[in-house]
Image (tube, rainbow, N blue to C red; front, side):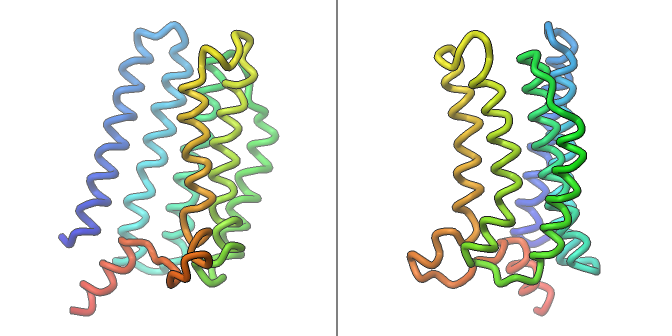
Length: 193
């Protein structure tokens, strides 16, 4: 097992550990449904590590890359629903039913765009940022006010900022070459050896 595959398996195990913790906490929680949604979100998002492995070792890569995208996005949406349950704010199921297929279709369409460009970064990372910001909005609009939940708001908004700058958003400014995922670069080079 090369280094990239090892780190993907570590990510998978960590995400499943978080999932298990949320399911255990849900058993004793005052809002068990919120804990179950959060646990299920981590479990679904953990599948992205397996999809990333399959990008390198099984064909077709587009299918598994879209699977990785879909699993992380669905996991984030499930976590947003869990946050909504925790704050007694229902997330609109119809909105999710439109958002998820639209985001997956967009990921399919932009698959062949050059990586490392602001357009690709914005279109690829935008749905993730939107899902995280939707969770932050639930917390901000909570009846007890954002003052008591500033840390949670910070935790929800920080990843959204990272999603937008992560793959290529800043690369034109620093004249970096277009980034590739560590797993794909390392696995393809080890497969040729």
